[in-house]
Length: 132
Image (cartoon, rainbow, N blue to C red; front, side, top):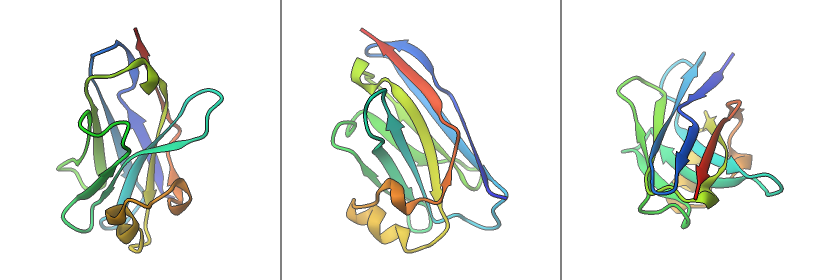
């Protein structure tokens, strides 16, 4: 059974940094794609960043976080991090890690068209709160 466990959420002041981590267990081999999504109260879930682990760690970011957030692969297989710098109050949300085992996800990650619907495995979420 594939499970995703997120960690690293918390509360910071605007301009601060947080680092989220997500580890996948129960999957044999290298999982092709992982992503980070967020959902604020009363808003729809939106994509934050995605990474194509099966091909040179190609990444894609939402425009709202470009230049501030960085998604990367850990040395441990099937573990990724989301480094969040220059945090803003509008970054406050529940952050979810997602993973997809169908390699076709990579094309969409590279094209920047991957959506939440493309990911079949999800974590429980970790709260990020940024105060002004």
